Structure formats: structure tokens, C-alpha cells
Picture 1 (cartoon, rainbow, N blue to C red):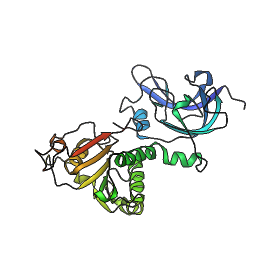
Picture 2: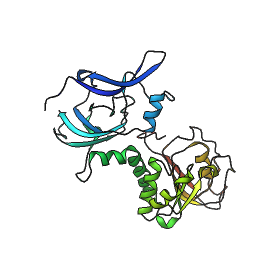
Picture 3: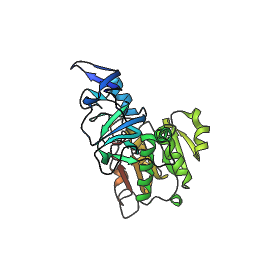
Picture 4: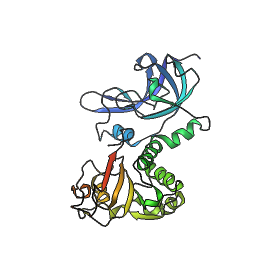
Amino acid sequence: MTLGTNFNAVLIEHDGNRQSVGLAEVPRDSLPEGDLTVRVAYSTLNYKDALAITGKSPVVRKFPMVLGIDFAGTVEESSNSEFRVGDRVVLNGWGVGEQHWGGLAEDARVRGDWLVPLEPAFSFAQAMSIGTAGYTAALCVMALERHGVTPDHGEVLVTGAAGGVGSVATALLSKLGYEVIAVTGRMEESDYLKRLGAKRILPRSQFSEPEKPLAKEQWAGAVDVAGGQVLANICASMKYRGVVAACGLAGGMGFPATVAPFRPSACRSKPASPLQIGSLPGRCGAA
């Protein structure tokens, strides 16, 4: 394969006072360190990318930076024994698009241990249609399973259900036999969520205002992309030994809650701590 001297990328730069973002032609010898180079076929535009582009959050840690926190493509150069030229691969996370040049480009140079081989059943477009959002949703579902939440335990709540993570989580949980209660700020998407398998649809407004420290036990598990007041209210209404997989901060970084849902018999008539809450590794805006 003959490689060009330059490639196109979405590049963000900062002069110390303000940042600029645009499509740029970048010399290949500017690519960062790594043991292989991937010809990118598809990437996705994620929430972190939007924060970086608008400058509303300090997502980018150094400049200049090629944006894009994931990609799918073909290995075109490799000194890594695990991958050969021509292998189809996927990358999610690892600080790409934040600390290491990312996937919104024609080429990306990364470490091989950040990559996952792309299964033959998937095209590049399908892999990125699932994307980091789908990957994060799957991690959340696996976290609930790992901590013992099964379909017979009761209803599982999913916030941001019409979004990327929420919609995939809703579909996965429903397929696995869970009764999914979808929370959304876009009630006009109710039919869509029901087609994904949601049993009931609740408005986000039901969770966005301060409530009592403890509420009626309702949810066996939850996948939360919001954080903030929404997460606090979810914790207050979790069942005994309920599990929350918290993977986003769309509603804010604060956690305006009390220790009450996490305490043992002083708060609920059970002998052990009633609630587990965990945040997933920072692969897609996860806390």
C-alpha cells in the first residue's frame, strides 16, 4: 500500500486564549507514537466530541488534538505482533480524542493493545452505528448481571432512554428478559422506546427535582446516563440490594443525595447495605 504524505483530520487547536476547530490537512509524520497505523473507515460523533468542539468542557488535555473517541478501520502499518496489515479493528476510549489523536481522521496511529478485532459479521458502518454508546450500554448491562440483578428481581430503570447509551441498554435488557422502564425527556419517542422493548415510559421531569432522601422501593437495577439530581432520586427508590450502573453526567457532576439509601437496618428493615452503586471506566463520558 502506498501511503500519502498528508491526511485529512478534524483538528482542534488552541493559541492560549481561544480555540479553533476545522478540517485540516495534517502531515503523516505528525502522527503520535504507536505501534500500528489504522486507515479509518468510520468514526462517530460523541457527547465528548461535542463538548470538545464547543469548548464547554475541558475534554481535550493537550493541543493540537485530532478529535474522535472511537473508530473502525483497517491496519495499514504494524509493528505489533497481534495485528497484521489488513486486519479489521475497532477502538473505543483509551483517551483517544482527549490525550491521544483520535478517529475523526483518515489515519490514526495507536497502540495495538487498545484495539479489538472486528468480528466478520460486522461492517465498519455497523460497528460505528453501535459505537462507544453501544459499548458503554453493554458494559452497564454486564455490570448489573455481574452484581446479581436478574429479570426475576423486578423492574430495571434506564434514563436517557432515547439517546445512544439508553436506547441500546433498553434493547439489550429487554432482549435478556428484563422489564425495562424507560425515562426520557422526549416523550414523543415513546413509540420508538416501546419498539425497543420498554414496558413503560416515564418523563424525565419525574426525576429531575429534589425529592425525599428515601422513597418507595421500586427498581431492582438502573442504568443512569444523567447523574446529578436524577441519580440521587434513583438511589432513593432502589430496592434492597439494588444496583445502579452510572455511566454519564448529562445532568451534572453533583450528587445531591444522602447516605440513607446506602445504610443498613437503620434505614430499611434488612441486615445489610441495601444499595450498590458503581461508575464505569471512562470510556464514554463515564464518571
